Length: 376
Image (cartoon, rainbow, N blue to C red; front, side):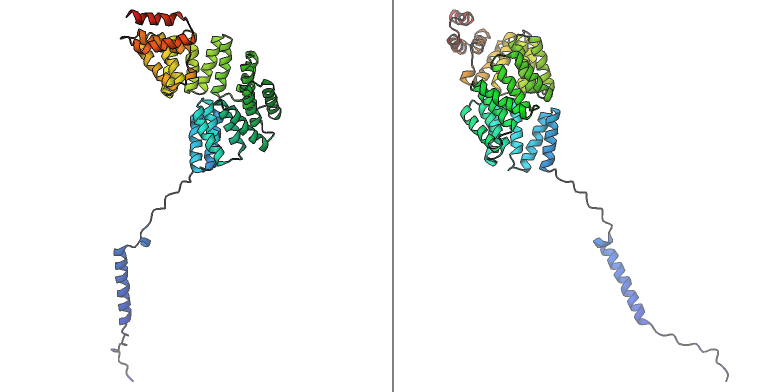
């Protein structure tokens, strides 16, 4: 049979494939136009920064205290207190810093809160007892100290606080027993060593006080308050060069109103009135409501014959000081500042001069001021 070479097999019709291909193409175009999030390259999520914990701030505070950076330590303790408002530790540590700077009322508010939070916290009880002692509340101070002692009979800080309380009430033998017991437990306890120096100081044994304060400084060389207490002993011995040198070290360790005032007042008493004025101005800038600093600054103004500033500054100091903190020197200089300024303000000066005569009857300078007002 002849073959028909013109024959071609018929191809199958695949209409379904074309339909599906079209649908896939349309879907791809739709997805490209819509650009869902899973097709778009996303940036990596930002790295999270961990929030510092209370323990972090406590560690920072302790490091700052060891280095003598007390402002930074206080800031770290405040951060810790904000994170753990029911924790007494930062409040007690802050109170200790306030005591170092002689801010007793601020310390008192903190220890009151600490004891309310943790009634069995030995450190809180001991610090509260010390603050109460500094405020002159000796009975309450001893109550809190003995509460702490019952909880920890061998705690050297508690024993040191009891030594300080008994020193202040004049029971020196008992005070010495407590302080020696504290140092037997911990010879490197700074508070016990400092309080032993204080015990010698109030007994006017200044050489022994110098030795103990010096030992305390060896243990804590960044504490400005210890240098100030050492410098005070040199003042008692009329060794003004050593006192000023020691106060300068206090300022180098920590420039506070307390340390600057100690240096400025020592300079004033050694007749360096210009330098005293410069230092005391800085102290008043740091604590403008510190009555003692303002009284010393007013006296420095007076010695520089700036009677107007002297009168204004000392009137401000008088409004901040307690009645028992006034003395003949203060009232005399305040009264004379009003009398000698231009124009005179005898109506303001005369009452202070009369008060001076109550402190020191017959004082010639006060009588001079009154005669000046009578003649005018």
